[in-house]
Length: 467
Image 1 (cartoon, rainbow, N blue to C red):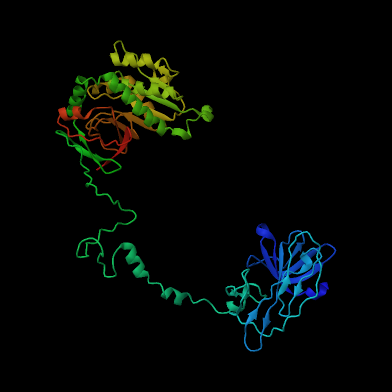
Image 2: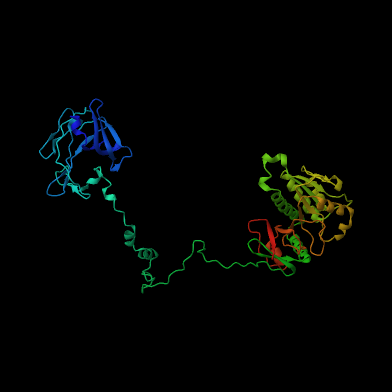
């Protein structure tokens, strides 16, 4: 009867997809052809649910697990059977020992309940007791732990695992010695015929394993020192040069084909790049920010420094910056000024000749190119003084391009100064000094007695700090 099999331990094979389940029979329903197990195990692991129900259609094989104990010892024996409730109306026949003598398999037959063979009473089951099992060849099977089929699976977990004792079995020093290729005394076991070899130098994770030459920080040596030294962010020393040596350097570049027009273009590109960074760079100049385009006031005089400023203004205007160029009217101008003005007029930049026509409100940046290295008398003229006063009264920061050497008072207070090639001994102040590369080859420096190694690295404009 169905009630006779309640509480029996069974193993149900549901094929390779669903796996094997073990557990205690909770209920058998002949009408719906189902069987339920409580405290089930799935493939040797306890299921997270308290009960599992199987249909006869899913069962490939069913085995009864009958645990018996003999009075003379603690031997555990499993009685495996294939009952007929998964066979086609056939009954399983049991011998006296409880082993089946005839079994058939089918997963489509109805469930037929047989009378249970009463096992011997079980009084004790040791935690390490196993029972032999017959295989298909009729011989003895390998012993198998019975705990995976029992209900009391926590009996062997009362004793804590001895981590310290287990760790003591591991000789960590010997293992690391094998990894390093040395014995425990630190000598190499392989290498020279004597079995000893010097231990190689060990490096930290942040050390370079490649041998490198020491860094030489003074890579630029000049024949006429300007009396002041600077250093880059990486520590390279950049000495200043006198204005006479600076003129000789530009004259040598002119002889090798690096004309004034080339130097003006290079200076304009570097200065405009620095100005764009000071204006906010990608945070300010974006297509979504056209309604807040930065405004730059450009103050230029009638000389080479003024032409450099006009070249910078042209590049800024090409990058959608609003540029207002101040340049007074003169009867005669240098050819470089005329050429740069012609190119600047092709942009959307504005040009004024009077300070009154400049923007009355604050601007984002003022670029000062009023000063000339050779003509200091321009400062006495009215247009110069008016432009300098306007720049000092405006709240915008000032960038001076190629300012004059020390000894000449700065009429416009600048926050940044940009030197060309090599710095001049600029007058002390709070202005930060920057250096731009105008493309002078190394051989040009050598012709004027300068031992030169480029300090720019991957940039064309670098900051300089007082050494």
